Every structure is written in structure tokens, then in C-alpha cells.
Image (spheres, rainbow, N blue to C red):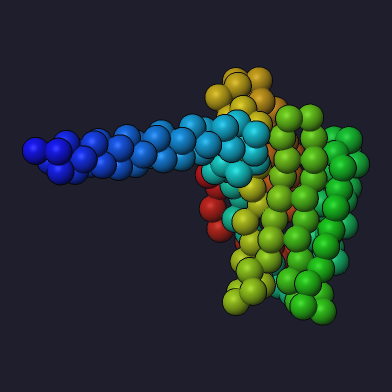
Length: 148
């Protein structure tokens, strides 16, 4: 009889431990998402196709766009300038694009907001999105593939 009580105690302890782990993981995930708002899905995306020899013009247009809207602009290169990463920071949002290693001519320009449910941030993103399209359209032969 004593042995059955020990087995029952161990089983209950194991179940309680597993439940604590699951609830702890869920809590940690929620806290992580609160503290890392940029790791969300983009609220807007502009997909474009640009020739590799037009990259400098793209960089220039994005720099002008960021200056017009008082955004912090950062440009980084990897693999000997084959791959690039651009990010523009604003107040409670950012815009980024990363060239794809396999296809460096198709780009997604993504808009992220700290609080994507905030209507005023959505409105700002829509205005910036529209203006960004105007800047991109100033580059000859750029094709807008998709707007989300």
C-alpha cells in the first residue's frame, strides 16, 4: 500500500511539474512579445523588383525618404555588398528591407509598429507607405510586385 502512495505522489508531482513548465513557457512567451514588439508581422509590405545596377539609386531614394520624414537611416552590407539590410527608425515604428541571398533583385520593404492595433500608427504607416511608393517610382524600371 505504501508503494502505491509513493507512485501516486510521484505521478502528481510530475504532472504538476509539467504544468508549471507549460504555464511558465506561455508566460515567458507573452513577456517576450511585449518586450520585443518588432518581432511581429509587418503591418504593411511593399514588394518590388529592381535591377542590381540600380541599387545605389534605391539607397539614395530611401535616404531621401528617411530625411524627409526625419527617420534614422541605417544601411549595412554583407557578403561583399551582395546582400544589404536597410532600416529606418521612427517614433514607435520602423521600416526595413533585407535583400534575399538567392534572389537579390526582389525586395520586400516592411513596415512594423510597436502597437499594430493603434489606429494612429496605422494611419502614419499608410501615409508613409504611400509616400515611399512615390520615392520608389522615381527609380526607372522598378516594378512594384505587390502591396499588402
